[in-house]
Length: 149
Image (cartoon, rainbow, N blue to C red; front, side, top):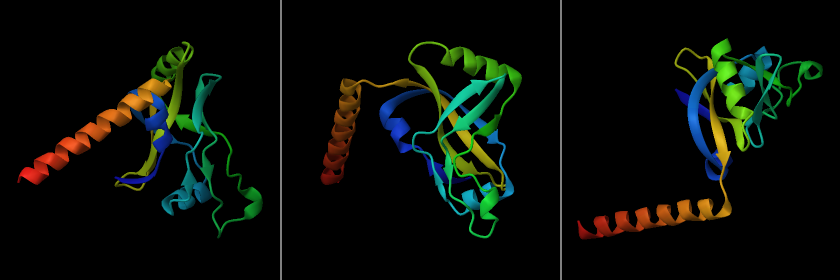
C-alpha cells in the first residue's frame, strides 16, 4: 500500500471516528495523475445525495498527456459504498457537529486507487492545545529515556 495523499489538517482539526476504506469512481486521466501523486486533499469532504456519496473539492491536477478539454480537476467524484454503509454514514452526518471527510488516498498492491474516509467531530481550540501539550510531553519523555541509555 502506497499512500499518495494524506489530509493532515483533518487530524489536527477533527476527532476522527469510524474509519472505512472505499473505492472512488475515477476517469483514466485521474488515475494516472494520482499515481504521479498530483493530488490535493485540502478542504475536501463527503456529501450525500440521492442515496449516493460524493467526494467534493478533491483537486486532482490535470494529466499532461491527456486532452485538456476533458479534464475537470475539482469535479465531484462518486464514492463506491454498499447501501447499508451509505445509510449509516448519512444518518451520522445528519447529527449536529458530525461530518464525513476523506483522510487518505492510496494505491493498493493491485494498483487500485482507494480512499480512507472517517466520521469527524470538530475540535475546539483548547482540544488542539491539549493534543500539542501531550505530544510535547511524550517527546520530552522519549528524550530523557534516550539520554539515560
